[in-house]
Amino acid sequence: MTATTVSETERTLGFRDINPQAPTHVLIIPKTHYATAADTAAADNGLLDELVSEAHRIAEEDGVADAGYRLVLNTGTEAGQTVHHVHCHLIGGRPLSWPPG
Image (tube, rainbow, N blue to C red):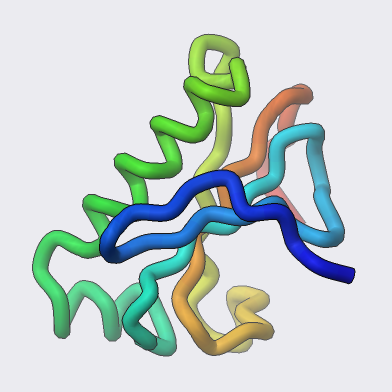
């Protein structure tokens, strides 16, 4: 199965999750490899800002920005990180409960 690309900037790539948990479920990743959000913050000032800004832009494009959406950055095994390349989940388009998982 191939993911569908929804955005690309000079430093980021956004694509639909192949196992979506909501009508909008997009992963936004940096093109440069960093294993975790903490590694990204330490190594590249401003890149996490770009990931969040791009997530918001995609949320607006998908029509979920006004109703609300969730951004998730899992960092480490106990947080549920299974892919060790930092990625921001944009999840929206349905009511989301708290706490997650």
